[in-house]
Image (cartoon, rainbow, N blue to C red; front, top):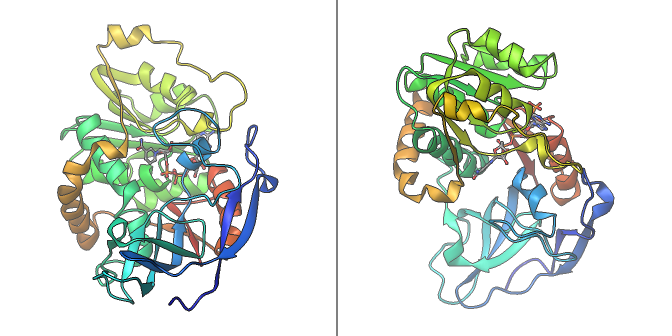
Length: 338
Ligand SMILES: NC(=O)c1ccc[n+]([C@@H]2O[C@H](COP(=O)([O-])OP(=O)(O)OC[C@H]3O[C@@H](n4cnc5c(N)ncnc54)[C@H](OP(=O)(O)O)[C@@H]3O)[C@@H](O)[C@H]2O)c1
């Protein structure tokens, strides 16, 4: 028996044109069923809002299916097991990471939940630095960009969840120079003064190619792309011969209603013999152990720090948190607390 009779969840009720608006979503209260054999009931304590969720609001074929209209949305969440069905070994009271965010309570198969160690790190860290975003940064930098000691690295979206870890990992692994771009003076200060980036600039302050050339007088060897468009073009123009681009995302285009700005200097890919590698975090299951050990070690030693931007209010605040994150209001991982 679960002690809760109803659960509240966020539904997508209209597909956004351009930036999503609150009217594209509705909060719906539904009966919470009792967990069946092999199932658990989780009371969510925090959930993630991520840029890829914007793509899932569109009805188009992609690497992850679109959100269905008038059904609860889903995504990463952490919560406490409050009830278990027959044949479940997971204890009531365990904290778990699972995929049914956007709701205050969830009933799901025990096998699709992963126990998290909250003595090692707060539960919310498993949505960010120790979770999907952390592995994205680690795999993208080490494998997709083939980072090596002595590389000069440029990362866009540098004050965000993925970007802030990419820059710090590159530093910890012996980068010659780490440069970041972000969308405010406060974020630029954070990158240089707190995270130890060698240089950073506000991409809203002027042409990105000019600002990047100034920040990287000897060029760059790796570009970790979170943004696309003008950033990508600037990086192609700055990369040294044999340079590598890991394409992680293109957030400048997710809300776009007009054709995206493409890099107009693709011929330099030939001239400078560049490699462009797109990737998905799901490409890196084999790196999970190494990632947890290495990033866990850097966190302990203080070589890597992480920030979270919290929005309180659970399902009532989740849409607002997503819109704020897309608008750059977060430093580090954007997390919704219940
Ligand atoms: N390939 C994968 O498997 C994978 C997995 C996870 C994430 N990603 C991608 O990684 C990127 C970062 O994700 P995240 O979760 O770490 O998010 P995040 O960086 O923590 O948050 C998104 C940030 O994007 C920036 N942004 C928004 N609009 C922009 C624009 N027009 N131009 C430049 N920057 C803009 C904002 O910062 P500013 O204030 O700096 O503008 C905002 O804070 C996204 O592109 C995401 O899709 C890919």
